[in-house]
Length: 141
Image 1: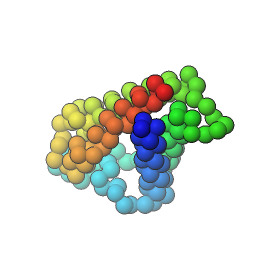
Image 2 (image 1 turned 30 degrees about the vertical axis):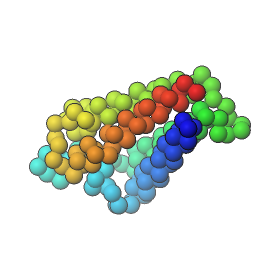
Image 3 (image 1 turned 90 degrees about the vertical axis):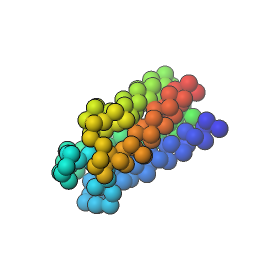
């Protein structure tokens, strides 16, 4: 059962990675809900560049492969102490993302009425908790 949940999370990472590549090459679908905006304005807090967006997409693809390696999905790549520690690191990173930095992202953000903030509370932060738990579970396999 755990391997199925890890596989589903790996698929989620592939979808998120593809979405980042789409955005990097000019796609606009979903962008307005994907970036935090300043309170009382539609101005995004940050302006991601193409390379940064491709990098984040690549990290998502890497995370997907890492989870699959941890459950021995690939015949040629086996789990190792390195993959275990990378899963622990991933679990910590996504837990910190879910908690947030205090102003724009996470469960404890101050700005709560923007489109992004509502999406973050309803979907992004809970997804980060889920991913964190899956990474930590995967580290024990």
